[in-house]
Image 1 (cartoon, rainbow, N blue to C red):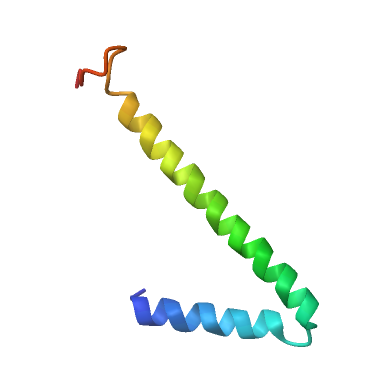
Image 2 (image 1 turned 45 degrees about the horizontal axis):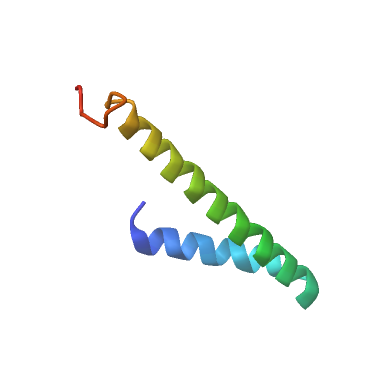
Length: 64
């Protein structure tokens, strides 16, 4: 899927989720999905750091 298709898909999904929701419900959903995205990014960054550290000994010297 290219970037434009992904953008259209996400926009359509947002419109479908927003249908018949109050502004308060939309605000809560927005905060929820923002936190979800941030948490996924934190996990990804942590995993990348850990996999990088797996290739180093205790002195920080790359052993691979």
